[in-house]
Image (cartoon, rainbow, N blue to C red; front, side, top):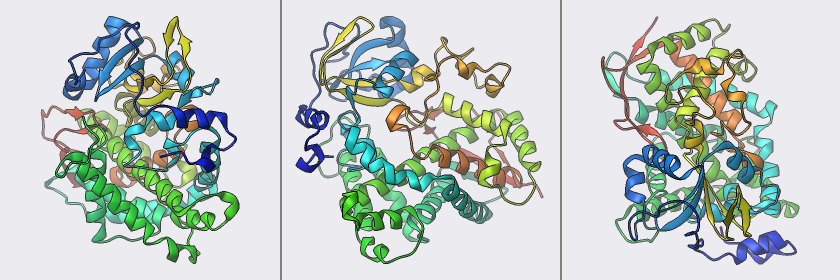
Length: 461
């Protein structure tokens, strides 16, 4: 997002952000760390195995260190204290918009790429879309959509779980957030999303025909055009989906929300609700197939629920399912790291860090740290039991949805959608992978099974 004069007027913080150079500073040589190869830095090592690389760097240089990747030099914050310092941002020194610079062309205008007063202004109306009474209505729709969607999935033969859940979740998001039944159109939108996300973690954000970034830009443009074309008709609609609600807000001059803002917010919400939940359910199915005792434990809990649907109120009363959900997000957070950019020079733990420094808060490193978790590389939902309560050591040791002012707006929606899906799946079907199969997860740009998770679904009754 490019700051305009109306965005920055009379706001020194936003003016300071707008004045930051396009490229973050390179003056980090005084900090511990390693820039890696000339030009490409540590990019190849990260793409090969980001988790192993990050933990090697942390073991060698500590929890605050410099690195270089994708043509940018960065400072990594790899413990919960540092995460809290950056994300709570009590001194208002960390820009999200400049941190997520790689999204400025692909997902422009969403609240992820807004800061401080400008961020608060746009976040406030979006919060209405996730109030409890609205969430209850979303839950009713999701129960119908998921139940109907699962009935179309193949049984008694192998299929790719990731492809099927991705398509189902896009249809869900389109209905819940756009108020649209997509049908055949979902294929084009799904392809556009795949292309868009493929352009986030790449070496060069230059539009050269045939490159991943070019395809990502075309995907982004297709999605933006699709939304723009429907704004006028939604302004006269009485529908209650978030897209229509934002179109109505844009009609009120007091909100200062343009059609471009509506498209930006809607696109970001669709992205977050679609791709991150695809990641969570795909990795959850991987660990459930590898640890079938947990699939059975969740199934037993779901079978004990009265009725043929799972309400928003019932979602909170599923302790076993909740432990599995939380442990999956600890092991495979949908967002691997959170970027920020410093507005002013600052000092942290004795390290003097310049203004305009790109900061990466290492979610995966924190989630896998022995400082906070027992046997952190082991999938162990029981670590969330009240008598163990390993998650209670630090408020920022488990941050799959971020923290502070930019904490994900839709975390309750994600929690509800995952559990409603498991309710309808596990009460009616058993999911199995080939015996002896070893699971592999690609971590970037978001965690997904390397082979798209081939499974067989068998009807229980």
